[in-house]
Image 1 (cartoon, rainbow, N blue to C red):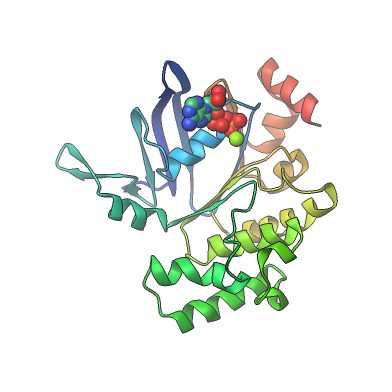
Image 2 (cartoon, protein in one colour):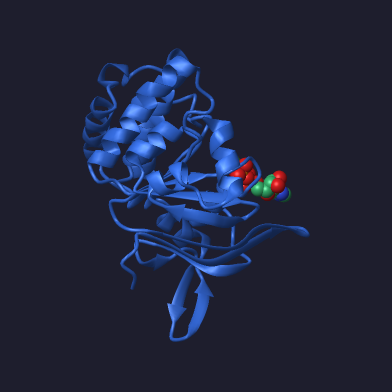
Length: 254
Ligand code: ADP
Ligand code: MG
């Protein structure tokens, strides 16, 4: 067992001959917010996809909520889980994408109800009641019966966050959740994530919003060329970085 909600140990990942992650260790305690920063191509999305077992690590281990992602330990041996079990594990992780990824043919409410009913076998009435609560929480109670295309980007992303929460996940992963939004819509999405942080939700957030990172993150992690160059409290990493590459990145983004 582990005291960490997310525990990444010695993870390597290559595509062909290109080693994209070169020995990454990352630990997130329950209730903590980790902001992952780094230049384009540094491996941030790959790391999130590995945590969710959408990709397999070449070396190293990842556990979420104390359970190895994709594997079962039996004595000192590891066995790969079947696809069904991996899908079940994945429902304990909420994933929010840059481009929302809502189901366009479903209403907002149906977007939230689908996975709890089909993947978690929860009663529809209960899933709907929970979905309405979550829509209220992200300020979209009155949009339950709309289709996603009728919503602004900021509203769609708030629906995507509510949809991720509908699975009652142990951890939420965000991959640049505001990068596809018009600047005036960024704030409403960050506000929802900020509320989740206050409520003690465990999150790993890839974002270039440094003001948000400074305010919300317990830990800021700077990834560069597939390795973690430094990590620590926001004030340390953002204001007093110990590496030139971190400083250069922060100066450029600001
Ligand atoms: P980031 O999210 O930090 O921009 P990524 O994790 O998306 O970085 O990508 C890291 C590197 O891995 C990049 O060089 C990218 O081209 C490469 N890469 C990512 N996914 C694949 C893939 N499926 N096949 C081949 N190369 C990939
Ligand atoms: Mg990315």
